Length: 284
Image (cartoon, rainbow, N blue to C red; front, side, top):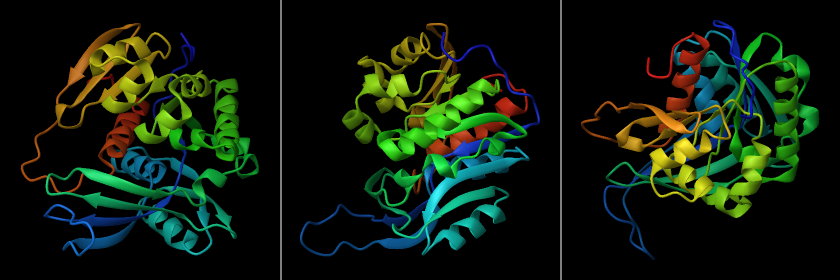
C-alpha cells in the first residue's frame, strides 16, 4: 500500500495546502431563465476548499491549524482576517499580478450548486511559497487536489507532500473537482497523489478515478492503493474502505430544509481530520 503506516500524533497540528477563493453565492428559488433576469439572493463570502477545511477543522476541535494558499493583493487582507478570526494561521502568499480566485456558485431550490470558476491566483502557488518549517509541529498535511491541476501549483503541492512523507507526517488528498479531474485524467491524478495515507473523494470523483459505478465498490478499489479511503455520498453519508474492502458506513444527519450545499464536503473533511488528529476511529 502507498503511504506507509505513519499515524498522526494526537493533539498535534494540521497544515492545509490549498486555496482561498472569493465565493459569489447566488441562491435562486426558480430555474434560471436564459436571456433575461432570474431573481436571486446574492452575497460574497470568503471560501475555497482549503480555507473551508482549515476553518472546519478548528471548529471541530483542532487547536493548531495553518493554511498555505495564494491570494491576489486586492483581497488578501480580507481573506487573512477572515481566516484568523476563525482561528486559522494564514500563510498567504500575495500575488500582485493576478486576482484571488473567484467562484460564482449558482444554488438552486434543492440546495444543489453549480460552479463557474476563475482559478485566479490559486494555481500560481509556487514552490517558493512553501517552506519546510511550515510543517514544524504538524501531525498531518492535507492537500487540496485542485492544486494538482496546473504545473506551477502542482510542483508546490508535490514538494509539500514529499517533505511531509520524508518527516513521517501522514498526508490526505481531496480530488476537489470532478470536472477538472476528468480533464487531467484519473491515472495522472493517482500518480500525483501517490504516498497519501488518506483519499477523500466524493462519489462522482471516486467513480471517475476507478471507472466503477458504485461508490462503495470504487472506495474499496481505491483502498488497494491508498491505506484509507473515505467517499462522501451527499445526503447518503459516507463509506470508508481499507485494504480493498469496505470497513464502515456512516449515515448523514437529516437536514429538514437544505439551503446551500456549497462547502459541505470541505466541512466533512475538516471535521474528519480533526477527529483523526484527536485519535478517533473512522466511525467516531
